[in-house]
Length: 161
Image 1 (cartoon, one colour):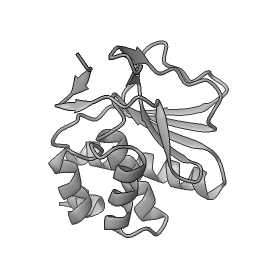
Image 2 (image 1 turned 90 degrees about the horizontal axis):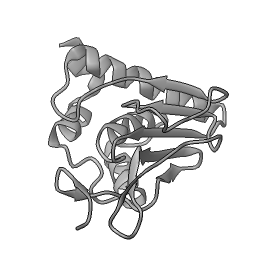
Image 3 (image 1 turned 90 degrees about the vertical axis):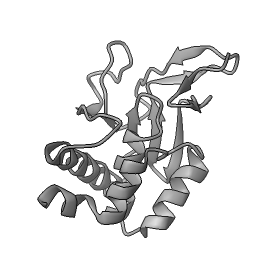
């Protein structure tokens, strides 16, 4: 049986490049034989933004690593502020031509929210950002309807309400 999360199959690749230097991935992947395998980050990236943190998944101490914990569901104003901060970190690193990985458990929703907001900060239109994420990572990316609604309304606006 293929490993799934919220009805979606885990990706077989640990991460995918969304735009040059900006990658989206998860802490777990389908190893191709239907087994859920951990994804361990070494020194492939200059910056790693983790929406969850799990022991043994890297990166090493030499890599700049920001960790935050937000649920894959409705978010509070404080959690939205955290997402905005993580997107700022990622966008600043991309502008500095650094390689960035944004990851969550499966690499679909929480990482997708941060990557989409990062793309908006870099000047992409919302529909283009969502299309890029879904075409480059997975059609299952951003399948959490709350997150698409948040992006459509504007994360900063929701945070300030």
